[in-house]
Length: 270
Image 1 (cartoon, rainbow, N blue to C red):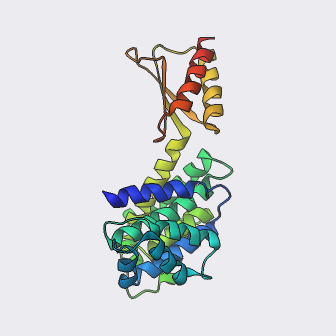
Image 2: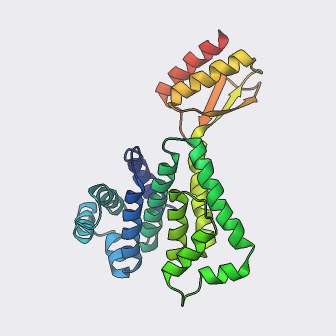
Image 3: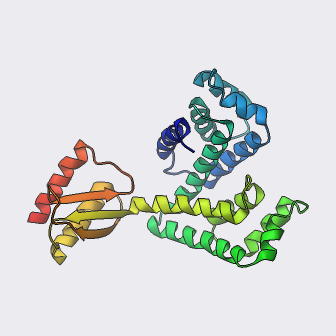
């Protein structure tokens, strides 16, 4: 996905972030359900990505389609999605799949943070590894004559200890791989998990090695700055101007954060 569709996806993902605290798997299930509707109706996809129609017009159309069939929260996400511009009809489905998977990943993150994401990653990876090593399983999970229910049941038997979040993503990948092999789609979900994990990793560059006390103060300051328990990786860069440079995920440093980083530098200086 590139160009206007990439920009649109970034916009709706940003809007989704405000809905993630407290979200549950039911929201993701609703979004996956809407995705199934879009995938089964090429005319609808074209209508919802028609550049000649206004965002409001497309939002009304989507509301008529899903009104009463999904939660109001899911309906809001879909309206935000269809109000954007998309380069082609396929992109809107790909974007909705990403949003639904992001909700699932956020649910795994709730409560246990980075540990929840690591558990989800391990469970998804276990499925990929088992399937990759067994050609008979690959054929069985892609068998067009088998019912979706039977294929999902088979897939879940491969990860008997998996939690609800992993089970939902694996089930979705088997039931609706959308042109991919199920394991390949799970690998895409793994990429989203990895990207989410970056929110919990702080890459810090400093001009000289830190003492144990300085590192402890750095850890505490960054946890307070970003509002979560971060894993801090420190790299010494003597050419650095300004004393401390921090990167957490793809978060950009704005003027407010610059000010707070200045306070953090003063804290490190003692």
